[in-house]
Image 1: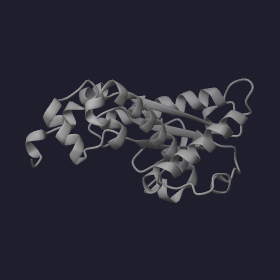
Image 2 (image 1 turned 180 degrees about the vertical axis):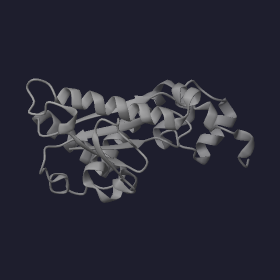
Image 3 (image 1 turned 135 degrees about the horizontal axis):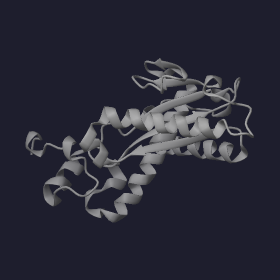
Image 4 (image 1 turned 180 degrees about the horizontal axis):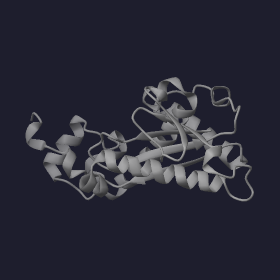
Length: 204
């Protein structure tokens, strides 16, 4: 069973990320990851705690996960919907390929059932179900949303060291008042999504 969700659809800067988490049949995500919920409804500290639990369980071999990214440049060139779809496809294929290795009990795509949030879809050859508000309703999708969110946030915090004028470590690229003020003062940097930024439309 796999859960899939994305993070970073709306920011003005940085990549978008897609989390893909695989658990064995019968694995009780809510029990094994107490407090798991939609990443947007958790504090940063709680998200980090659950993500660290996920990393530990992955190291132990109980679960598997990956996070696939698409860059701000790809978003500008192709559009957010296109790149998210590609990230979902890459993430699902990579993880199922790993799970379908000779040492795994899974041998083909039909062995996997994928639960996806909102409007997301896996490649057509997979058994799948798209669930509206899945990140709130399905713990496995919630866990995928946490993987995507925490991984992206950590990446943007690292990028903040290269572009210190914008305060990315605080707003993670989202369009806060402080971010817009920095944009007006310094202009755009290399990781901004140019197609998302319309300074003239913002009140000054």
